[in-house]
Image (cartoon, rainbow, N blue to C red; front, side):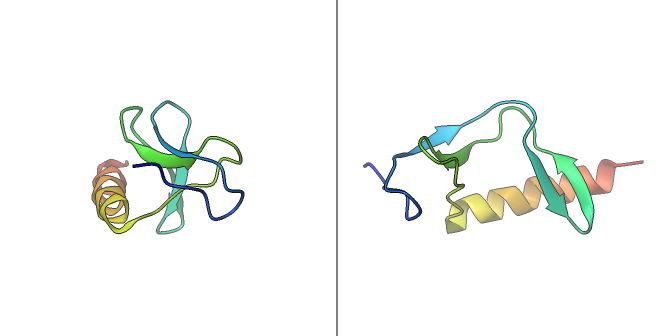
Length: 68
């Protein structure tokens, strides 16, 4: 199933890779390189559906708790 971006009409695709940063509790954390983020291939908008939000919260909480 193809999902269209609400920002530009581009195609939402699963994206993994290094260097993706997210804010969590006033701290900037880098997502694991294997974390899948549905992202528009045209404009780069992130598609945060409910399953992705739950996975993201779990990962960010774990990263936050591990920080020094």
